[in-house]
Every structure is written in structure tokens, then in C-alpha cells.
Figure 1 (cartoon, rainbow, N blue to C red):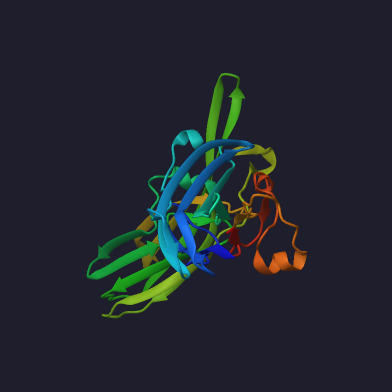
Figure 2: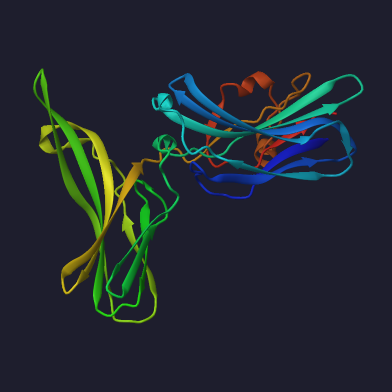
Length: 329
């Protein structure tokens, strides 16, 4: 009995557009196994309800011609997630990122294909429609001899998580205060008449952090952390007006003697992360369905002994384990 395994290098909860998914496709060999093809597919699917409204595939083929494997072999892989998708896909309500490994083996009488499907991570939906997003934003300026560099790790934030701001100050000759303020800009629409709509907006200070810096000729590095609210504001006050947009700005003010000498503003996209990971139950393709394994064995091995048709509509929620799919000999 031989098997196929997908092992990811990174155990992150979420992959984001533009990031790399790396790992190894491992073929475990118990006795010499003649392999026709081994390939791995990355599938990115956009769904609106029960409809699939968009897709993106990438492939890696590891065995180009038939060969016999005499020992366990590991095939490293690297996939890069697309950074943006066509605006027509913005109606989607779910994005799934899946890795599908397939191994085609040869026996005396038939060819057997065994598949393993592993749903890895789901990124916040609106990030796929922002081609301008950067994995890091950085701004710099100078006041006299003092130089300032401020950066944030990315141009999007996850609601309920912490935003980390990093500062570098060089050749400072005064006592400074660096104040980071996260602001939420809400916009809503008021219908004064059937023919006229009035747009209104208001800015709320969500969180503020301040740090004081003394004189120094050396470089100073430090970080500030701001907690982002877990929920978006859907209505405004007692009026019940629906919020059309809720944007965020990170405003960095540098003060000397209580006077603002420099200001940096970072526009930020907010996303609510509702799904951390999806994985699909593995189907083992065999000529006939074998007897069902005990539940305890299923938990230990990750193998599912059911007909292939069972996999089509079965999705479960939870952390993605390393799955094994048996290859019939």
C-alpha cells in the first residue's frame, strides 16, 4: 500500500493575495510503484451562493513520463496567489483556495488515478479586488536634521486584530511625540426626494497611541500597536441610515512642543475574516467501495473509505490536517 501526502511549509491561518504557498507533495512507497503521472493543481474558486462565478488554476507536473519509484519521494512546490481578479467577480460570497494532488499509477490490467483534495485557506474577499494593495506601506520625511520613516506591514487590516506601526527616527535634536490615530470614515446616503440624494460622511477616532522620544544622534526604532474594532458599523446612530462605505485612515502626527510638524496618512482597506480555513473530505478512488473503517481509525489516518461521489458536495470546517489518499495497486 502506497500513499500520497501534501505537507505545507507554513501553518498560517490565512494566505493573502500575492503571497506564496509552499510545501511538498510526498509519495510514500512501500514497494516499487510504477507511476504514469504525478501533478498538483492550485484551484482558486469564487462563489456566489451555489454558483461558481470565477476560477483560477495553476499546475505543477512532477513526473513527465512513466517511471518506477522504489522509495518515498518528495516533490517541492511553490504557488503564488493572484493579486487581483476581474471586477465582475465582486458579487462572490466565498473564495476557496484548494490544492489537488493526483497520482496516476499503472497495474497489469488498468490505470488507477488517486486524488487528494486539501482546502487550505480562505482570504478576505475584498482583498482580491484591490490590485493596488501592497504588502507593506512606507512613508518618510525630514524636519531639519531629523529624519522619519514610518511603515505598516500591509495596506489592509483584519477587523478584531491588531495593527502594528513601525517607526525609525534618526538624528533627533528635540523631544518629540509620535501619535498614531486610526480613524474610520463612514459615508451614508440620505434621500431628500425621489430625484435627489444627499451624501454625508463623518470621521470617528477609533484608537490612538502616543510615544515620546528624547534627543539622540542615533537611530531609534520602535513600534505602536492599535486594536481594530471587531465589527463594522452597519447603521449610523438613531437614524438607521445604511452605511454605504466604511473606510479607515491611519494618521501619524509628529509633534514638537505640542505643535504638529509632520503628518503621514495611510489609507487602509478593512476586511472581516469570517472563515479561517476550509478542507474537503478526501475521497479515495478505487474500483469498488471497501468496507467502512472504524471512526477511531479515520481520526488517526485521515483516510475516508467512501465512493468517490461522496466528495462532490461534502465540505467540513476546521483546521486542515495532513491528509493521505491511498493508491490502489
